[in-house]
Length: 329
Image (cartoon, rainbow, N blue to C red; front, side, top):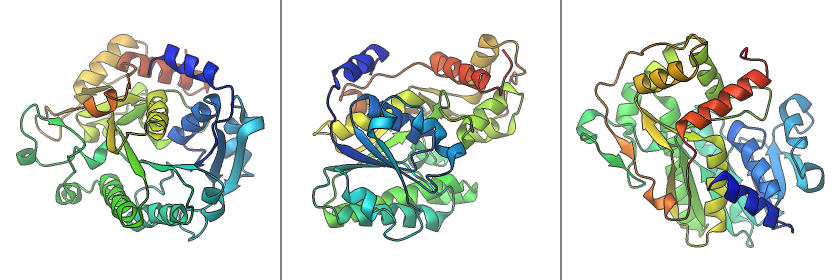
């Protein structure tokens, strides 16, 4: 969805569209989702671990429409029944919260939210934030040259274990558990699979993802060396994609959310040219061999999704780092 289309959508949202729940509302992606939901006319009930922690949630209260249509309530992924009240008050749920890479926590946290969803007979749809790391991590034998990975692809747990990529294992197992639970209990579930999310931070506190991007502009090489070839997507597109699949009745299954796929050397070359005043690495070693995979976004584009390009997403990220004082102008 273009910026013009988003603004038009916002202008048309004169009336409240209903109440939806966003889990982990203060997170990097969730904050943008809350921002866009409020602009689109929704009443948002956000769950956080501590609604009174102004340092964590203060940026949410500064959003347009927050005073009128935002509620923040306490819920914890690891407390059974913790989401019951929040979910029962809503007709849609966006489950973006993640406890990190602890496998049992990721699975149990997701199922905890879905158990609450099961109790609400008037719930229309649940949108799960998964990850492209559930799709792309396989050994070379399973990644033929120039393969275009789509939503039917799943990462190899054995391959992830061999490289100790616990985040991908947690995301894959949590998403598979969600599909199984939704099928058994008749829950209308749709999953959004973002690639590496880049863009402005609404919170002055940086997310781990944003911290990794900041590191690149400070000359750090370790993180992106381990990432290898990677898809990139603007955070605003991720938020818009969640709302698109929630609002589109025919949306079903998984949706890869990605703008472009780059080798890490392609990325640093682009960034070094665009931001010559920062000590961006000139090149990065490749630990995975010669990867040539791409992502197919045909499924989400068919719903009308358009993506912001890589240059703009990093421009917006740098502007955000500067405004928060993490980078000098």
